[in-house]
Length: 134
Picture (tube, rainbow, N blue to C red):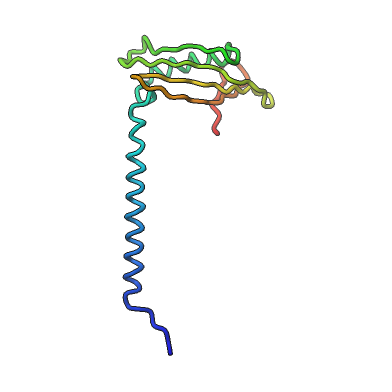
């Protein structure tokens, strides 16, 4: 007695594969729509002049502020019609080889929303601070 695969075996596998693909596509679409909340975060309102201004302020914070000392920043004068505020606080400073590294808490606020960022910067001098990837 020999075993024969049913003729619809290929069809069954195609249906399963198609169902799986539709399920994955649906999950991807749902995942993408769940990211719509990012449209109203303070980051979505930042323009290039704002970014240039906050980089200058952040460099000053990294160079001159003690851990725990908060500096306020606002985008006033950058030409952006949306008011953006930031509170920047160095939280910890450490030495890693010949580099000084600083963890900073940045709280951005715009249009009633706020977000907390926790970047880490390392550098050897006053102008070479670099954001560290995690």
